[in-house]
Image (tube, rainbow, N blue to C red; front, top):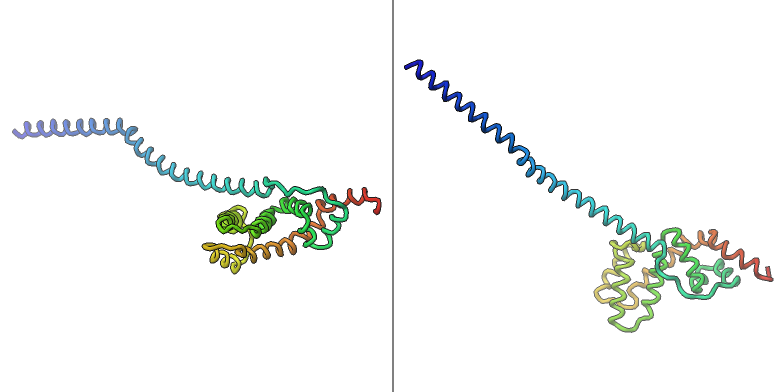
Length: 220
């Protein structure tokens, strides 16, 4: 009886080992299929991250391109005749005289492009046009566009304003009027006058414009 029990136990152990071996083999065979879900999950996770990174890169690229388009001056400049020698000389006398002349604004605007600050001139011109409106609905619409283009921190054309002026604009935006951007326009005008204008007068852009006219003039 003892030997029979031993023999039966051996057979049971043998069957259990074979079952365990048999279970391991299918599990090993199933591993590739089980790896797929893991791989799929990993890919899912990676996909989310990659998409997020890709979206951020695309957003940065869109902002960079938009900023580049603005700085390169895709917008048309003002229509005006070629400046005379007298006009170009007056531009060097004061910033006010430069800004009062369409040809002067064009020349200065082209210079601002090289300094990546053309948005200052664009904002100033937009405010000039805005101040001429009389229709209330048009005033509200143009105020919204100016805000989105030049005041919003999300815009690639955002101009540099101090917090006091920016907060005043934010308070007035629910009911904008013709004076909503007055302080901001003056601040940007002063910024261009003090910062960019002196460099413009010393730039090749201004000198190359003045020199040919001086050579052509019989007075010179």
